[in-house]
Amino acid sequence: MTGKTKKFFPIVFICIVWLLVGQNALAGEEGGNWRSTYDMVMLWVNFCILAFVIVKFGKGPIMNFLRGQKEDIAREIQEMEEEKGKATAIIAETRKTLEESESRFEDLKAKIVQQGERKKQEIIEDAKHHSQIMMEMAKQRVENQILVAKQAVKGELVDMAVQLATRQLPKMITEEDNQRLFDACLTAVSSGEAAV
Image 1 (spheres, rainbow, N blue to C red):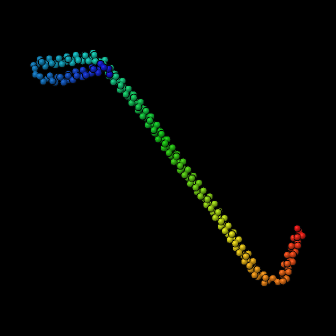
Image 2 (image 1 turned 90 degrees about the vertical axis):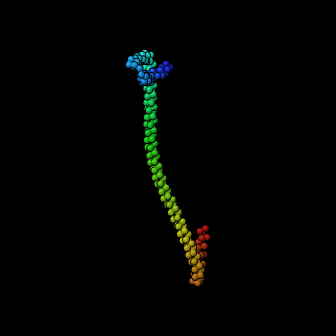
């Protein structure tokens, strides 16, 4: 709005208010019939003069003002349309990001479940392997203990047999048996010396 237009609008407004309110204020005065007719004619004359002045001198500023308002409103509408477009683009981008996030979340969830299942199977297989190793070790320990026990029993049997033989043989060997054993030992020793 230009400076002239700003100064012109209060004057126009005051004139319009005076025309509308002034008639009622003057109607309260009582005069003759000619006075009310005169007042009415003057009112219309003043109105026509005011309308002529407004049209003659105010048409350009009023039209400029209205054009300026139209341009301002059109510019504001354009700016709002652009902001609306930007907001719509942001909303669409946000929705797209949200959908991608949901799909990524589902993929991540599936991968975690799959890794969990794989890890579970690995733990089960590892536990089976360890249990087999432990069973083998236990089996070897048992076999070693059985072997040690067998050797101990054999040793004890040998010791018992030797003890029994040392007690019983002197009673059972005769002088002839003694001579035969002596000759067998001599023969073995002499054949061993000859081989050397």
